Image 1 (spheres, rainbow, N blue to C red):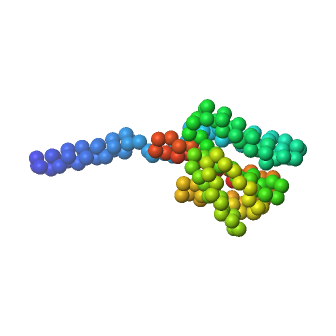
Image 2 (image 1 turned 60 degrees about the vertical axis):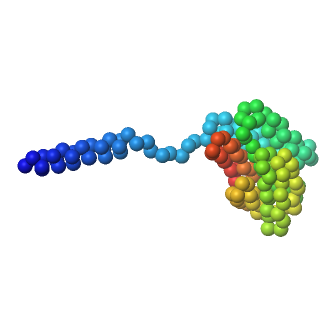
Length: 167
């Protein structure tokens, strides 16, 4: 009789431990982007249509947007030094591809593949499809109208990389 009583207590302790472990153990969740990262890419997305419209009105959309992106990177580096972006702007029959990330990217259309070093830009003949290769990851875009902006925003912090893609 005594052996059964001991087995009963061991079983109850085991069940109690399993229950407590299930209640106490944290659930893994996807981390939300940090506030500054979200604010920076949202602000860029909110301001860019005004710059594009102003450039269309002035007749110099590409140079207007290049100036805006440079100024925006200067501003963003004061808020979050790890923030960067790369974009493609379809307008005037060509694609403007600019890289404001710390590493080179590869911009590929069905007709051509171009390496775009950090801090530089290139013009590519108009194409409906474009793929950015950044750090071993492909980001595919399809353009459906003109003008149209596609962008990849990235932030590196410690061992994690935050990414937001504007399709």
